[in-house]
Length: 256
Image (tube, rainbow, N blue to C red; front, side, top):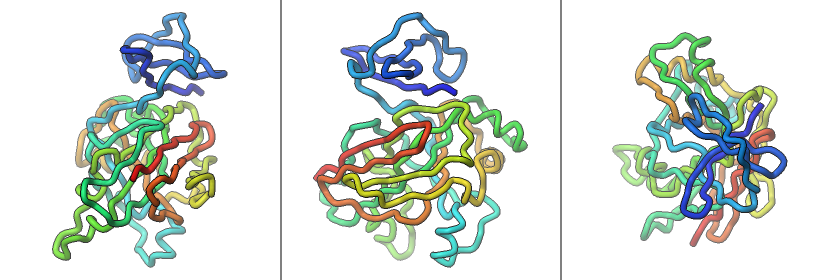
C-alpha cells in the first residue's frame, strides 16, 4: 500500500508518497513510472493539493442499496452517471463556495473516488480492475435548488459543476480493499454520514467496465462511486470532513 499526494512548496509543485508525516519525493509521472528521488519533505512544510487533476470527472447516482430502498428507487444494472466539471476540483483545506447570488441549499455527498491509471476502452471487468490506479475521497457538492430549477430539464452538470464543488483528496491510496472500507462525513465534528462501501450496487471494476463501453477512460480520470444515506445541506461557516480509513480525511470549509 502507498499514499500518493501532490503538494505545493513555495513556488514549486511536486508529488510523492506519504509516510510518518513526511513525503518521499518522486519524479516522472505519478500514474506511470514514478521514481523516488531520495529526497523528502516534512508534511507540515507543504500545502496539499488535489492529488489528481482529472480530464473526465464522472459521478454516480443511486449506487447503494440502503439509499435505493429508502428512496424507493429501482436497482440499476448500468451506472446512472453524470459528468462534473473538471474545473470544479479543489484540494484539502480549500473553501467550498456557492455560486454568486445563490442562496439555496448546498449539499455535501461523501463518496469513494476511483482514479484511473491507464487508458481503458470497452474493457472486461478484469482489465477494468487493473486500470484503477487507486482510491481517494470525493465530496460531490451539489447546489440542490439548481438541479430542479427548470421543471423541464434536470440540470445535473450545472448543479454539481460549480467552481469549488469537487473536493478530492487528501491522497490516492493504492492496495486497499474497498469492500472493507466505510465512508464517514462529519459537519463541525458531528458524523452525519457513515456507510459501508460493501453496500455498493455496482462495484468499482464493473463501473469502470460498463462506462468504458461508452467513453474512453484515461489516466487521471476520476469516478465518484455515489453516496448513501445522510447527505444533507451545509450551513456557511461549517467544516465538512470526508474520511475513509486508509486514505485519510478530506476537510474543506463551506464559505459564506
